[in-house]
Image (tube, rainbow, N blue to C red; front, side, top):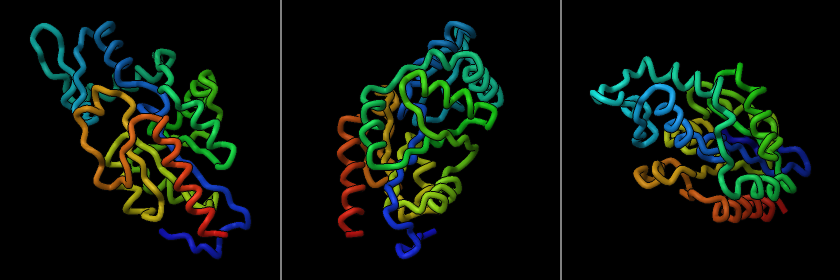
Length: 219
């Protein structure tokens, strides 16, 4: 989907659509700690795929994928308080909010929408939260149509979501970010993203540059 520039509202602001887990809040390390404490399971994520990442201590038995997702669901129901802020995330969003609209697009079921918003609020991040299941291309298209922004930047840690957005909203700039060092070190940059930056201190100027480029083109 491509938005006709003539259809944009006068004075439209840029739009940042950002994931939450491993972009704004750390999740992987805390999920692993909880699995060890509560279930005697060792957690070794590979390329963001949890299907083969959980092994029971002792025999090393792999936890089947159908048992992984209920554990993730329980983690988000009972352990979200464990999650810590990604360094620089709050400050970067505060700076970007001065010139852009911001939406947090997070892959949780809708029952977690309010809890996720409140969780982010405890870290000083207050922005609209959109919960989603599956690829993020469709929700991004809807948000772009709603906001009619001058330019949109999408930030996510999973390559499959960049692929989805590239397919459905190719005009959106896509930034691949993985804040968890243990995962970042073994995960290649997404071919569908325009850039890979894992730290907000470097991501902020990259996003600001995309927003500035759009402002110059519109002038």
